[in-house]
Image (cartoon, rainbow, N blue to C red):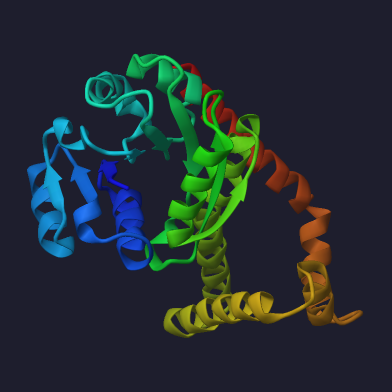
Amino acid sequence: MKIGIVGTGNMGEAILKGLLDNVVSAQDIVCVDKVQASVDRISQRYQVVCSTEISAIKDCDVVVLGVKPQNMDEVLPLIGKHINQNTLIISIAVGITSSYIAKNLGINNAAVVRAMPNTPALVGKGVTGLAKGEFATAEHLTIAKNLLAAVGQVVVVEENLIDVVAATSGSGPAYYFFVTELLIESAVKHGLARDVAQVLVENTFVGSSALFESSADDVVELRRKVTSPQGTTQAAIEFLESKDLKGIWENALGAAIKRAEEISKN
C-alpha cells in the first residue's frame, strides 16, 4: 500500500512518524508540503520521499490530507488531478465535510473518511475519531482505523458527530493544559512559589492520568475516593458546582462545535 501525506505540520508529521514506527516502511510513503524547508526537514529526518509537487501522490492508494481547512479550496482540485476513484482520502481538517471534499476533488463517488486525531498523537498517545463519507465502504473504514491506530486509540462515529469529537478530544488537550495553567496560577496566588506549584500540579495530573489508565474504577469512582465527606476536596467541588461548572463545560463544547459548523459553511 502506497500512502501519501499532504501537509506535514504537527499532525501530519505525527501520523507519518506513527506509520513508520508501526505500519509501513519509508519506501511506502510520500509526503507533500508547499514549504521547501519542511520538505527538506521531513526528507532528512524520516528518509522518505518529500516534494513540493502535488503530483508526487499520483501512485498512492491512500492520501492523508493534513491541510488546514482554509487551504482546502486551493489544494483539493490539484489533488483531484492526480488520484482516481479508487484512492482513499483521509482528511484531518476540522469542519470540512466529506461531501465538500468529494465535490472539490472533482471525482465522482470519491471515498472519503474524516479523521479527528489530537496532539498526543505526537507521542503515540492520541485518540482519533473516524467517520466515513457517503461513498466510503466498511473496508475503507477498516484501512483508516488500522492506519490511525499507529498514533493511539481509534473510535468510529457518524459524520454528523465528528464536530463533537473535534470539540471533545481534538480540543481536549488544550482544555487540559488550560486547567493546569489555571491551577498553577491559583496556587501561586495563594502563596506557593511558581516552580513548586508547577511541579505539584503537573505531576498530580500526570499521576492521576496514569492511575485512571491502570485502574478498574471509572472516573466517577476515582473522584469519589479522593473526596472525603466534609473534607477539603468536597469544599472545592461544592464551590465549583455552585458556579455551574457542568453548564460551563457544556456551553464551552457547544461553542467549539458551533465554530466547526461555521467553518464547514465558509
